[in-house]
Image 1: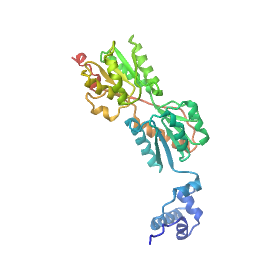
Image 2 (image 1 turned 30 degrees about the vertical axis):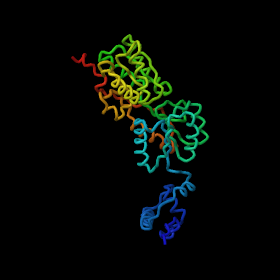
Image 3 (image 1 turned 60 degrees about the horizontal axis):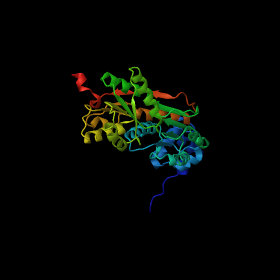
Image 4 (image 1 turned 180 degrees about the horizontal axis):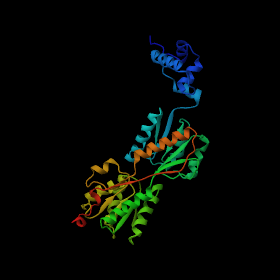
Length: 334
């Protein structure tokens, strides 16, 4: 016959304490004298007792679970966000419950509402407008926004400095001698406006206005779809800044398929510094927005919020320019 799993009552009886004492010790709601705690630890180990998460929730109201929602887990940028968040969660004995929103705005609120009822706090990377995000307030769960500015003083946010990142890419292209510069954006993403503003401000200092193009999704496939109309258009840019690395990589691939030389005919760059860019040919110039670090800091701020600490100011991470072959002007170097 299968051996019965030990219960909290078995631990209490064997250690010679009350059930309430064992519960408080396991859930960390009260400290006891070193001899009592040592006896409890030894008894738990000897019996092989494992606490029941559901029972712990009934006692403390805590699930020790964090809900994380990202727009598309296939995008390595979001994978890195989750990796960073998970690293911190494990350090503090939390588990992540992940929801992939699949770039589907129609289902975002429904999915987030369901997720919020099962966790102690939420890390959110969504495209929902702020007034919809505010509708999550009745869940009474701490929220930290990722890669978008929060207008709600009760909700913290952690972001890369997207304006600075755009400025850096534009300045790099100017330094390489490019003057006919385009921007392939994705207007539905909040960071897009900030990145474009940085690009525009930098180019304006050189008397240049960027040529604007629009992708229909933040994906490699969208970059491929946009490529021919841009490169065969009446005013082909000599250099193109893409909203993210995925769009840039898709554009780069299709440009080569169409017979264009990169960066000879067109230089291409993006944002995020996903690993794929390093191994593309030519290697993709990008801006590292510290995706894993974003996840780490956001998780630390969420744990602070769960502990009752105030949200504090929105956090901006400093971007870092990564120069590779896709934007190097060989004629200038010669």
